[in-house]
Image (spheres, rainbow, N blue to C red):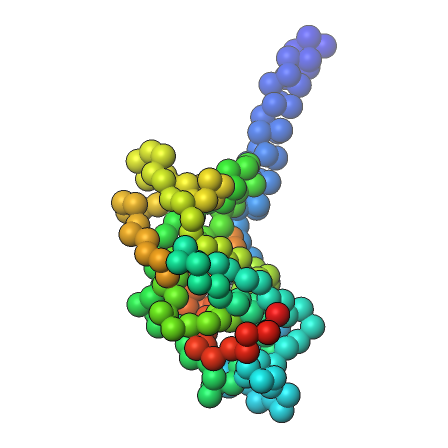
Length: 209
């Protein structure tokens, strides 16, 4: 009876440890399947629609907008998950204007287990708005913020805007007045520019919300 009791005392912690390891591995593994919507989706400027608004944007249920103020006090409109964009009004952001910066998040345990991936985007000087496509592997939306403050807190670690903690492979990146930071979620396959579309326009009605 004593031997059985001792066996359980050894066996139960081992089982719990194995269960925790399995959960951790499953939690860290991203879903590598495209969202159903993305399987047949075309680039936003190749989707044919008849209902573009004055700014060359076709909205869908789920499209939303936000305003981003750059450090130069210039305000950008950001349109996320539109149905389509007019190729006459919108142009693709060059890949050379996009730089992967690192992975991390808001420094909680979930971000430690499954970090998000962040990119620096240099906004074209004359741009009045940006538009982003769907995150097809995460099946979600990007998040975009201006960069108001950046600080290196240790070797390979930086903090942006006092809330975004990132592990970076290189030294502190150079930031200019036209940079924003883009969170593409927890699947590296949703790389900005190559998988996740990003466009800009230099023409936008000032009253657009």
